[in-house]
Image (cartoon, rainbow, N blue to C red):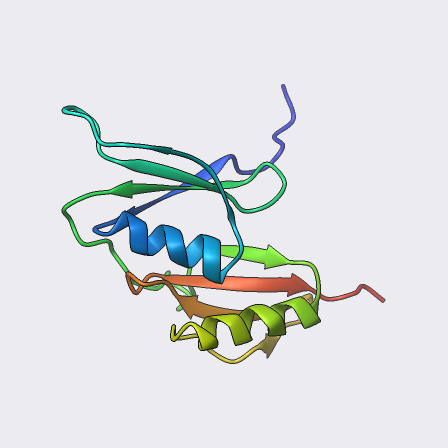
Length: 132
């Protein structure tokens, strides 16, 4: 059986693609991979590179996205940065842009914080702690 290499993409719905795209590219630093305009049969789509070969696909829809936490009370998905210092830098950038973000919490294997994108959707942002 072939080896799985990771997650290819995660799809986010939004009623305002421009606003969500700005958040993930300008506030969090993702790079625009491609954008496709709406057609008579398909909605407008943008894909951003969030590191490695991982992507977020954003689809503009008339329906408001679900913003619930997962069954454990967490975001249910997350992005990763390399260090605690970078996590602090991202947190400061989110706050400076006027978006909500929680405090950085220390877990056994990583540091984490939960931000909320412009649609109110939670996203955990984490940095792995050095292993002893």
